[in-house]
Amino acid sequence: MYYDLIIIGNSAAGLSAIKTIRAVDKKISIAVFDKEDEPAYSRVLTPYYAGFDTDRDHLYIVDRSFYSKNGVYTYLGQEVIKVDTNKKTIHTEKGVYTYKNLLIASGASARPPHIKHDKVLTLRNISDADKLHEFFANAKSVAALGAGLVSIPTLSHLKDDVKKYIIVSSDRVFSQVVDKEASYILEEAFKNKNVFIYKHDDVESSQDNKDGSIKLTLKSNQTINCDCLLVGKGVVPNVDFLKDELDIDIGIVIDEHCKTSAQDVYAAGDCAKGKDFIAGKSLIQGNWITAVEQASIASKNIAGFDVSYEGSIKNNTTEVFGTDVAVVGYNKDDAKSIEFFDPQRNFYRKLFFDELGIIIGATLIKDTNDAGFYYNLVKTRTKINTFHNLNQFANYAKFLRSINYR
Image (cartoon, rainbow, N blue to C red):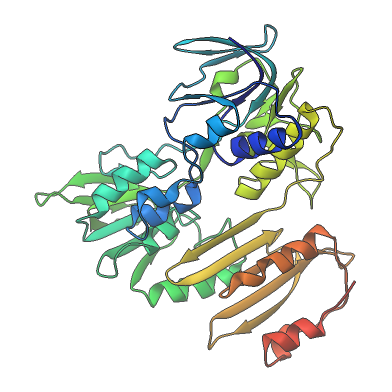
């Protein structure tokens, strides 16, 4: 079977590609392959479903009719196991398919836990969420190994009477997400919700208890009894099926057109390693907006336009234990910064800028509706002309007025 465009992957990037192509070309034949037999759904919402904060049906972005309405052939439940870029074919267990153009949006998988146990789980896809949903139904205590954008949001959506433990190898929570000050503010908020945090620690082993729970022995020799352990230690791009076919550097290396090293093959999303807007170097950004943008750029080039990608910007928003958190761009502690903090409201804003005073990132805690404002400051390379100690301001509005930017 031949298709003008084959898309491997049915999440943010895959959907973006379909919508972009169909906006400019109603005729080319499109086929979507994905190992999950599900219409596209939001991975961002899976912690809400796992923790009983929303229904399973609310995860879906589109229904199955979306594909037929857009003239897309679907091969959902068929995993692509091989790509031959010379013959321009993809292989599944059910057949071989030929493409004119190929977009790889295969995403990433949860990094496998080093502890093997049926109550040690990860969360990446909807089937993972189903398992956790079942475990959490009667759970009295849950532990999380890793303190990032999967484990902490999932814990935060559990019922209040569930005991919650966070085990993190670093010196703080969200160490890969926010700056130090923001981490400490969040830690205090978590502790106020009766969350127990174990820093500089790891799980060494697990043992079954007679009551059906498991006993975790930590590197510090402390022990935790819990009903299950959620492991959130990052993700691994799904690129094994591309061995020897493309230039791979952890992820699929793409250029400014989101094109790979093979002719007529493009990549986007969590499997792709492309230009970062701020640093200019290649990296895997791993967020929804980046996946959508890269797929849109790739699709426009497939459609015959000549469009370049300016680069991805880190952009993550979540809600943890009742506190909204948003991060935009570069927000590492080695950058210059100015901040505003209202401890009574736990309201925090921090701007990061480079040597020229150009805004390169921001961290926001609580009331994050203005995250788009900060994203735009980064995207437009806004330059601050006057720097202030932001804590001198009595309120946030006065802080914003104080920033002399252009």
